[in-house]
Image 1 (cartoon, rainbow over the protein chains, first blue to last red):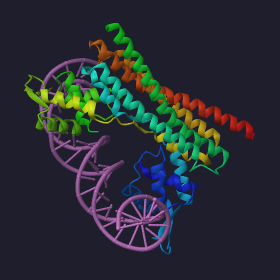
Image 2: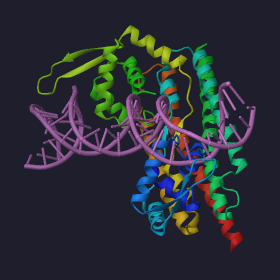
Image 3: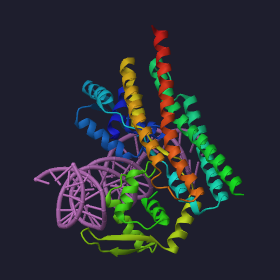
Length: 184
Length: 184
DNA sequence: TGGGACATGTAATTTGTTACATGATTTT
DNA sequence: AAAATCATGTAACAAATTACATGTCCCA
């Protein structure tokens, strides 16, 4: 997909500047881009060209002036069409760790266990981070009950995914132990 | 990461042609690239330049001649170094569906349920596919017990990830139902 | 006779990242 | 005095995809 609809979606919620959008992307676990300027400002120009959004420049004293983008009626229709009509895609799961592990056949069990521990530590860090963000409710406070629930579930999805990874690590450990005992 | 180490890893297992590598990537759920020629053949040239692999051209009658790549001693050392020394990365989870759902606030519950059903159907297809592949044991038959277990677990990881997605869908459904009942 | 498997490669394009550039205000 | 926040934008590069190009054999 393109980042365009993600941005259009944010603007369907409330008017925002490019800088705001950047921060929302950087803070969100499921808006998976890095939040770099190049993508955001280019996308905004494109949305503007297609009449999906409008903008208003606000000059500020003692601060750089900003462009506040709002979604148009046409933009809302396009967004709704995209949400409903686009065929849903299964997640793309890029797990470098699995590739590392896949060629670890020549390694000793001890080394593999070390890798698993490193992985576990990293995953736990992320879970803690996302749980904290979910608790802060930054971008879904004061929203209608219905939307509130959905947003909560988006965080929940990411947390569950990483917790699932922890379960898998345990499974691998148990299996390694077993084959170790049998061989010993 | 670069695809280079993934390819080097495959070659640490057995000599392969570019075409072989392409097919392995396309069939594997955790080697997440598309398996396009551009990346593979370029990567092989680079590995060759760095003395990590060597190749041997085999002319065939009634078939295009092929280049069979093998890993060098130096390549094996580099691969092992990469596996052990590279800091493990948490998975990159790109779930377009979550972005679609995140702006579904203005949709009716019925529409959201339709989206969930579509998502569920797609996910189930993938699970079935991966389970089939795991059962076929195509790229890990006849391998030492130790390696066999690891390969099995790599498939297991992907299957668990998608099954986790199904669990999440149920959770969302229950929640939607609940808020629907409360509002009605 | 048309498509698929085998086999290697290139071209064009899209997508995404890091780094550069500017400049004022506020915080440490 | 240095670093972070606010604010917009561009340049250079890296990574990845789709499509193009060529050619044989085998199967339906």
